[in-house]
Image (cartoon, rainbow, N blue to C red; front, side, top):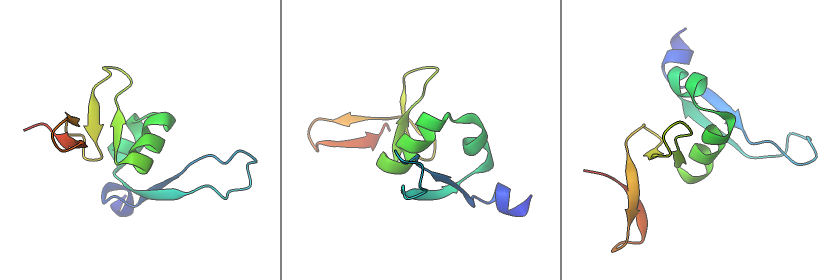
Length: 79
């Protein structure tokens, strides 16, 4: 399972006409790939963060909680 444990899993966003032309990204770790929903994987890939379905909490690609910082206008990790 070497490649699976070290973050070499990729996710492709669905394309409207199913011609495999949609973007894909990756380096998801095995647990992220298994436990995130398709929507969460897509959101994480496109925005580098996702909204956890079960709790509604925003998290970054590494699973850290994030929030909108009004002063910088960016989503940042909560410290």
